Image 1 (tube, rainbow, N blue to C red):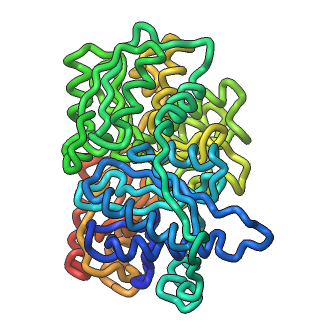
Image 2: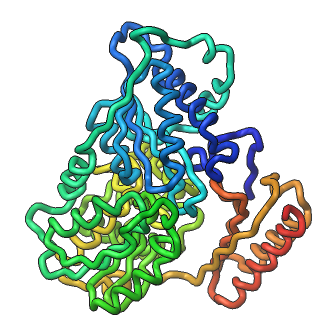
Image 3: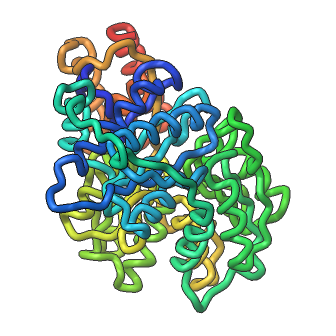
Length: 458
């Protein structure tokens, strides 16, 4: 069951919506810049240097509009803004930490089509803001407190471009690959989704020695995620077969998630990537507390595979922000979700698609095993994920018919399956995930629940 608030601007991964429509307007972006500046450092005492903010983006057409608006908002509060241009979300988290900035801003709608955009905010340590801080920022927008804080004269901020951010991130991401290994002899298909990794991705894998076959690396502002990348990995899988590659790598628009394909062109999803890495770390003794973090949407096969090897899982809410929060609270260093967000907390503070791909490549090189052999360690349970449009995200508990059908399905599955029904944090959709032993049966159950939700909320 799930519920939501109509009043919130922030969802599960920052602010998101159709560009130039509320809340993703330039006016709101400027207000978010001002409110974020005041919330994070407007009340600092004894500090004379201006706060520093890193702003990066993906390749969407609307990024120019929102970049300028956010920059203006921060400058109006006295901040010094560093514009890094198109760079993966994990790269912006890294640059924020590396430059000792006070905050990092990502302008991206991740896997959504180009006409969407979004704003994600990192704190000075590269972590996404907790719910309480987001609520504080929302409460400040348009408030008298914010209006009273208007620096003038030399206290107004300024913005400048940082030209070497891409180079810094390339060095950083390559350093997460073992120094005694190289990718010589590997044929790699790399799908950058016409997104933020279109420059850095090919360079990283080439400099590590791989022969790469890049696809969807020519952004035009409108083709990001367009039938390509992690959300549409079939083109990548075909290219693996065409080029007889050892692996295919499909990133999403901001490169914080990854979906792979093995040498046969068979898809390897985020759950399988997570389990492959967890099993190797268990064997090497580097998986903290022998535990990794999953979400309610993760396949039960991950838990079974880890248990067989002496490991275990703990569950966090959907979204890499909540995965990271759970990892930090429990002192863990690996977590992820089926969509391809994989977090290696020993290296970065958020999901990183290229890092996850490099971890799998390192395992392939160390073990001498093909990716098809590695993924065979995890037997996935049949799982169905359906989405249905909703006009309002009202609590499901308020609709007896929805509760009735969900309860009926849960009872029918018993302990041999499960049902997860929740709202998307970034789109006007309800998500229905059902796992069980019979693919046909669970598909029918998912459709029944979706039809009921549509009748009540569509």
